[in-house]
Image 1 (cartoon, rainbow, N blue to C red):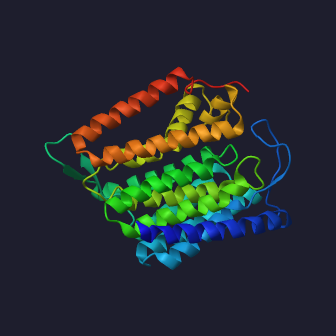
Image 2: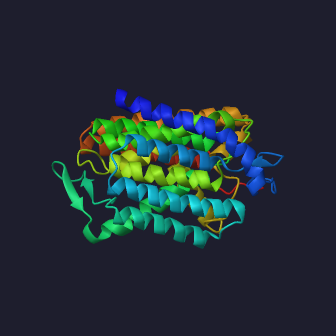
Image 3: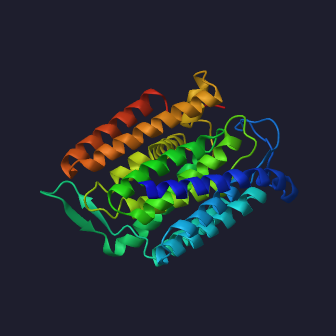
Length: 342
């Protein structure tokens, strides 16, 4: 585990140094978030280039500390595609369809680099058996990559929320990847967590800079890679439940949003104020309190995921189902499936 400290610290330091530079340069290149609607939590223009600092810190540290192979190259190329789409979106705006095309292209780069979901463990069988996806491997991988990439973007609504939750998720994934012997993946997770931590002092409320779609989509994309390579490659784990639990805050918030919008007849891509952080703010919590609550929930999810990964499939399945049922019940009781009027 000591081998993960230096990558974490280097990425953290690079992000910490580059973020003030991004704050100064963002206005010159037109990367500013101008408050235009009631969903914005700020009332003045904020630099929108933090994602670039996170990206550079992550890629530099990955190149310094990981063993370069086809999968790492695919991650770097795919991440760069995501960054380009994010920069265009933050500067000029991109339609949901065009963003999806960029994400599918980045996902295909991972597939070509042999980053794939090849199998699931079958917890319903006697003993731990494996279901090989074969031809379904490619669509399953693309679905996961695009889905996780967007979940982080959807929770990026409060100062420090996406960066902090992504850091916690990265550390949880790092622990499991290290436990399963995927040291290269654990290094990438440590690097991503470090980059998020280096960015957070400038992004925590009151934020001096935002990561924008550039940063949020990048974080989601790298988390999708880490979860595939660090968790889903293990036949000993409940390969789908563990990463879903680790990424529980963005995954379940996104799932609730999709159901809510479907039930209310709204477009799946139409933004609303029904996300979990909006609900907590409506209860009277401040931005800082809301973010800290969601950090705590994310930590709990990470602990639960590590517990599930340590049990055999049968016990882990029962635990996972009970956790998911509890989350759905909480969602119903808190009105997460109901549209919140503006």
